[in-house]
Each structure stands twice: as C-alpha cells, then as structure tokens.
Length: 388
Image 1 (cartoon, rainbow, N blue to C red):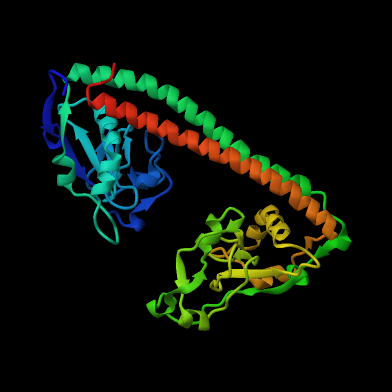
Image 2 (cartoon, one colour):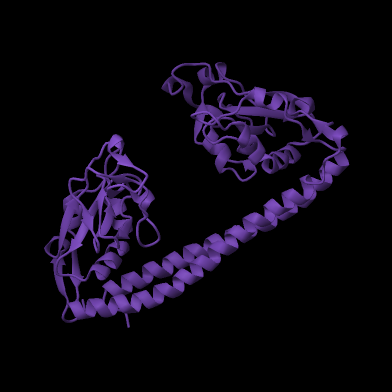
C-alpha cells in the first residue's frame, strides 16, 4: 500500500440509502413528480436516464450519489446521479460519500463490479446485502490524492470513450453492410411469376408440437433429443448450432422431430426471428418449421429471404397486446422464388458477404472487450497506488 494511505471499511466513509417499492399505479411517464429509477436498465453510460416519475416518493437519492445495483441480473453495476433527486427501487442502493470524493467513490465502485457480482446470492433473484457493501475494506488515499487520481482517470477514460464510440459505430456499419446486401439481392426480385407461398415450396410447413401440459414437466426432459426454443432461434447466426434443453422418449412422443436443414420461424415472444437447424430437433408450437423442397428452393435461400422480409412479417403481428403471428399469416404472404440458379447465385453472394461481416463483427467485439480490459486495468492500478 502506498505511503499515506489508510485501510478503512467502506461503511466508514459513506452512507448507504436503500431503495423503496412504489406501485405501478403511483408512477407515470409524463414528467410529473420525482423521477423514479427501477433498475440498471435506467442507467446511461455515466448518468441515469429518467423515464418514470412518481408523486409518492418516501426517500430519495440526490445529486452526487453513486447508484449501486444490489438485486437482479445487473448486480454491481453503478451510475452517478447528476440531477437533484430521484426515487430508487429496491433493486438499487444510493451510496453517498461522507469523507471521500464522490467521483473517486464512483470510479472505486466501478472497479468492484465483478466482486459484487460474485458475492450475489439467491436462486430466484440474486442480490448482495448492505454488509457486502459497507464491510468492504480497502486502502484509501488522502482527499487531494483522490482528486488527482480522478483527474488522471478522467483524461484516460475520455480517450477510451472516444475509441469505444468509434468501434461501436464500425460494428453498426458492419451490420448495415449485410442489410444493404439483402436489399441489393431481394429488392430486384419482383417478377410476378416467381411469387409463391412458403407452403408452395415446402415438403413440410407447420407449427412445432408440445402437447403435454404443463410444458415444463420434468418428466419430458433429460434425454438425447435436442429441444429448440425461441431464444435458441433468436441467438443463432443463420445456423442453429446449440441448444439448452433435450427431450427424452416421453418428450419426443408428445412432440415431433424435425430434420436438420429445417428453417425455424419464431411466431411468439421474439417474432419473425429465423434460423436453420444444424441437427435434428424438436420445438414447440411457438416456432414454425419449414422443410424446403430441394427442387424448388434451399433452406439457406429461405432464411436469407426471411431476414430481408422480417420487418414486413413483424408488422403483420402488430396491434395485439402481445405481438404474434401464426400459420394463417403466411397463407396470403407471397415471396420471390426465381429459378434455382438465380437463388443459388443470391446465396453465394450473401454467404460471402455474411462471412465478411461476421469477421468484422468478431474483430470489433474483441476490440470492445480489449477497451473494457484496459479500463479495468487502469482502475486496478489507480486503487493500488500505482497510477502515475
């Protein structure tokens, strides 16, 4: 520890203010009353964004407080409050500096995000206790040294922030590059004679099966048959290569095994997401399966096509409390299926572009991870007294 620094419990230099529960009927989205933050989803890059207000706050956080997430999936995430006051939910605590520089406290708690996350306990809703925060012992420099460290870190982080913004822009541009490729290919396929229903070019076209109730009955699971859900489709990158659950023989008997190469289309939860099965699998009726007729089309072409028309398909599910589409949605929706050699040319062009874009995305995500590592390394040096 650097000379002149003292080891103290965090509770000796801060006050900790718990959040409060406010009923949904008591807050609004029209800017009336006191701002109400419900969790880390309200956190901005540094300061929070208020989207709800309440006229019935019991106790508030105030400007300069560090907001620490203490419950839920975001345990350890912090934000610095820069508005006069807000009400906070029980998912958050306000850490108020007493004999410590507020900005130094904010940066200090940032460096302990992984620590707090590792301390979280509770199966349903993980969380940390007041003692996990107040009992944290750490070396603290004198106040003037704290301010100097903040100045040095602010200057360093300004450069990192610019680099992150530039990298995120490049990542977004890479995604838009593929979208422009889809437009270039499918925007020109408008021959009326080539318009067909998905069922016209399918060997099988229908919803998945999961007849047994309740659907989460443990007696169905733990076998050798992959069971795909909407999240698996959403998270796939064209080909569905992983799964989180399996059916046993009992599960298979009340479901259906679809062959590898089946195009999966989600029709509930995350609608119009697509992916191609990389293995034989079962899936529930929240997913439509389409087995292409190889004499008329291919699964790769269909999946690219549905990516292009995703916005149009999603729009068909709007207007209900929970957006969804169904088999009937596709009974009147026609899509371009030109001769096979034209489809094959489209697939070749888009597959090359997709590979290029994925390489770019991998590169930019790695760069973002590197920037995060540099930030954490600087924080660790600062609070070990090694920052020059």
